[in-house]
Length: 216
Image 1: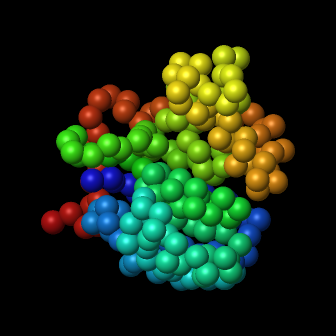
Image 2: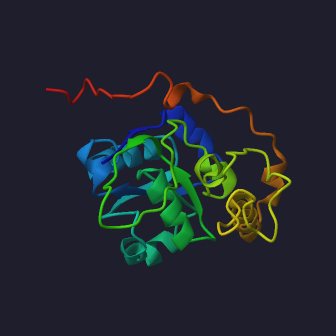
């Protein structure tokens, strides 16, 4: 189970300031169960953004973490300027991988993940830091995918697009550069990112989230 909570509406609107038409994509699994990113929440957010002057529509993808489900909406996705994903940080990145020329913004802050530990193989892409900023990095999370969690460019040890710590792994910052270059956004990487505020992450050990509006 992956748990998240919606970003503050002021932050969402601030991230959307360069766009007019917004397709809000709910996810039909984990975030629907935890009542933060399902169809109901997506429609409510779309209505709110319309009141704020945006052209917004809500759609549901069964599982944004699986590319074949995202492709079912590819024609509609192509007709919007920006995608606002209400999936977890993994879903946001898989969605962005499938549509590399499209701006994808996170609408949730992923809080924590519980994953199966047998049978399959998974690749970690989100650390559940509680303050999702992947839209600044071409939707490649440097906190998780960079061995050193660097926020302002690669280390001096990467070589040939590979990681210094694990040479068989792609350098996260090479992936970030390639994605931002494909979108014509390289100049954004010149902005200095502030130190990470870890208070929303695993500060103090195991976390638990309560939603008083839905708790029985």
